[in-house]
Length: 564
View (cartoon, rainbow, N blue to C red):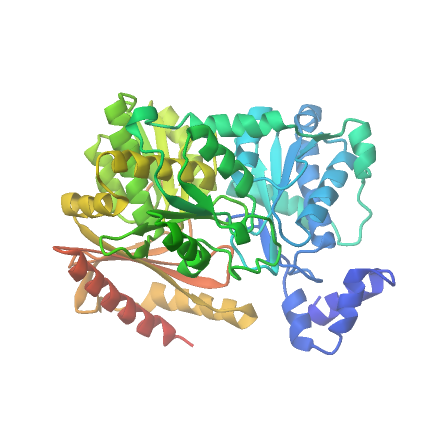
């Protein structure tokens, strides 16, 4: 069926008075809107389903969520009665319809005879990932669009290892999902009835405590080693992080911090920030204002589901400087290794994981402390998915991260975790402050010791059908016709991951190594309408590295944007 036929099918099958049908009627003469809403079905990307909320097969709504949940239920039922008893844990963020979609999913799972665990309110994504392993459930579902704008929502699916579903499980789920129509009557038990029958179980505070205990166990230093009066600011960006982050800081004894009050409570419209992505420096506007009022040395932020984490630090000139995900990664890798070594808790046969598009400086830092650095595709189902390989090799997992402000410090929390990253950064800042150093001093010391790197992660946003098609044409051209010389440097190595490379599975990623020491990667985003570029240069000085990186970025963009 084409978009118009799908539109008519939905209009014909929905009852009068249904809010989705009312929305369909309002778009009756907007053929562009109909095309965008129905030209395809949502499919599993690097983080399950994700799309704008609204009517249509390409949007997040009660019909797409119901169909997805029944597909997940089918796969669980196929694994037998034991899998059904193990059950599924469901979480949600503060977005529009997140609570409603989580209740709907719980009711359908209960209708299929599957034990379902839910939280009394919103919770961070990493807490869900932790409790999958703690409760030994077969699966997990989180209704969240992470850091996307307010008109998005999503459906993250997890499996019993605590990771987001692997490609194999995702494909199996998607096959089950596609076997159903949108207007089937799926088995469903009303929420209150499910609770009374024990099919739906509401989790108590002891599970929140277990999650925080796991985070706090990651500490390398405490007590007299730290200056707990360190002044800093934290913002949850109106998401799920406020309560657990504040409790973690209280538990650790930090006394000099403040929260951005305007962004403390959940807000599905993200009124105070607009685009709630801590990777974007504009998200720190209110944090900077508050920080300047009382002399904060560090600003920290988590995104709406508290899995992403970013910081700004005070420079030697007294200005707040936003760090990219690679730079925060350097500080975390350096502190975890240095801190645990000084505390005598660094494993002899340790290992870390970073994504293939993350700065090579991370590997240099790890290897300086005798760590083996494993690589993985982007996304924490891939990064944390390497933990079994690490254990099979007889090594101890220490840390995993990627450039897009995601960090995983515990083998028992197999997703990126903004709460634990925040604890470790606050601890690091307090530890160095006790020694008379700032994070700015430490970062520049890393560059001085291991090499002056520059890091640029940039992208082109190309929305809609035409945008997706153009991204495809760009990747085709880059793969086939990218020049052998760019920005005055020669391409000495090209790696195409499309069919896999060494122990890395297949992915639509290209890597280029230049003869002047620069490296860059190009890939389309799996969850957003973007083509992304990761550009790294190492030079004698940071200023020269930044200059060359910017020139390379300009040259790459000129070539790629010429593709119509």
